[in-house]
Every structure is written in structure tokens, then in C-alpha cells.
Length: 113
Image (cartoon, rainbow, N blue to C red):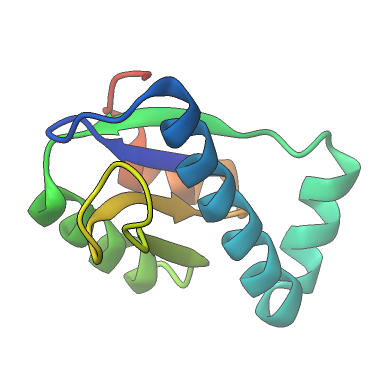
């Protein structure tokens, strides 16, 4: 699983951690529904998660389209606006769990957060 966090918005470390967690949980639930084999392999393999930087909202949307084309689970996370951000701010994109080669085809060139 890879979570792509927007680098063009300012978040405290705690807020960023919460948004990344939202993406991981949502992707996991989607994979459990539609990609049971991928989910089992990910669960049995230690639940690897990598967090990388995305440039902007448009960048996240482009990555989401590519991930969907590969039939990967995705979750675009939108903040409720109760603390640091205006309501509706997209903070990150979760992709996976799924085969590493498919996820790398979408996010393999992105820098680590």
C-alpha cells in the first residue's frame, strides 16, 4: 500500500498521521470487499505501507485515475474541516493493497515523505 500525501498544503505531523491512517483504513476496507486475495497476502505479509509526496490535488487525481485503470483499490481522503483545514480539503490518496509491480507503476517515481 502507498499513501500519497499532498506537499502543497501545510499540516501538523499529527494531522498528517491521521489523514494517512484514514487512507490506509479506507483502502483496506475496499480491498477486503473487492480484492480478497490481495488483502490476505498484504495482511499475511506484514501490511507494508509507504508514504510518498504528491505535488498537488491535480497530481493526486492523475495518480488515482492510473491506479483505477490497473484495478487497484483507491481512497481519496477529504478532510472534514474540524481542525486545521477548510472542509473538503483533499489531503492524500491511498493506493492498494495490491501487487507491488502495479502500485510501483503508479507511484514508483515519487519521493518518500
